Each structure stands twice: as C-alpha cells, then as structure tokens.
Image (cartoon, rainbow, N blue to C red; front, top):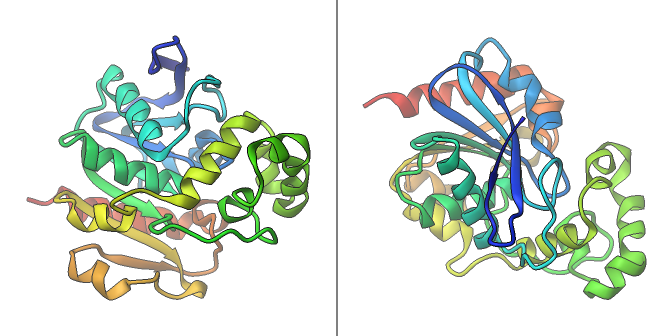
Length: 259
C-alpha cells in the first residue's frame, strides 16, 4: 500500500499499486465506494494488465484518511487526487473513473493540465441533479441536512442502496459521504459536462446499453468524446460485465495512445 499527504492537517490519501509499464493508469471509484473492490478484477484483466496501475481511494473513503475540516467538494477531491498523483510520479496518466470518480477526474483534468493524458469515464455524473429522497446516491443524500444525515439519514440510505453498495459505503466516513454526495449533486460551475467538452485530451465514456445513450449524447460526440455502450450491465459496469468493460476500455485507451 502507498500513501501521500494531500491536506494541510496531515491527512493522507492511500492506494494499492500494481507494478507495470509506464505511463501509469489511475483508477478512481464512485460515491460510497473504494477502488480495489471495484477495479482490481479489471485492472488485472489480460487486456488491461501490464501497466503500472494505482487504485486510489479518495479522502473520506476506503483506506484513505477522513479529515473533518475538508469540504469534500469536487474541486477539493480533484486537488487532493492531483497531489497524490504527483507524489506518486503518476503524471501524464490514463485515468479510468467511475460515477462520482468520473466527475472528480474531469475537474482534476481541467484544473491540473498535463496530469492526465487520457480519460475513460464509466457512467459518470456530468450534470447537477435534483433532490429525490426515494433514490440512493447523491440525489437522495442531498435531501437531508448534515445533522439529519448523521442522526438517521445514513441508516435510511443504507436501507435503500442494498448490501453490495453498502459493503463499501458502510466503511466511508459519514461526514465525507454526506458532503461528497451533496457536492456531487450540486455539481460545479462550469458544470462537469462543460468542463469535459472543453478538455483537449483524449476521452471516452462507457454507459450501460440498457439505459440508452447519456443525456446530450450528440454534443458529446461532436466534441470528440466516443460513447461506448456495454451490454448486460447496470451502473457498476466493471463488476457486472468485466469482460466487456476490459474490451471497451482497452479499445478506448489504444485509440488514445495513437498520435
């Protein structure tokens, strides 16, 4: 396990590293997740193996520290991730990022030019969402105040998300989970979508075929973002269909590596 200090109070971000060739690949998890359980299987798949790979846990999640004075905005997550990558010498990295991690990776690529050479977004959050108490994830979390979430909302979210998601969400710091969820739902200005459209690096997006193309698909394609449907999966594409995930991601990264 590797780590780096990424916050003035000494908080450290941690990651599991798989040895291999450069340039590195960095895997970033979604809200209430951690990278090793979600990505270890596909990072070692024959189509993706052989590259130095960092399976990073964002602050507040998984193996990383949980600073109470951290705002857990997308920008703060992005800056902390950038600091960890620089400390690891993971510059010019190919970043593979799921859900909230995709939003963080977009913001990081925009705020830290040169750090990311290619971006594969896995069913990412691109736009703000409205509060909806009946749903899991950020739109449900944002319906609580911070005090309500810490007092009883976390238990209600647990009952909605189910045992698979809760297996990692239950390990997250409650304050980090709440603040990250609320800030993800609110999004950024400019929005994550607008930042993605402006990026001049190679990027691609995987989405569950059963859900249909993401909102604004034509605009994404026009900006040079390939949209790749993956069959027989839900939101957790890398867990539901690892074979097709590895095949699609490998194709996108091979394309990204071409001059």
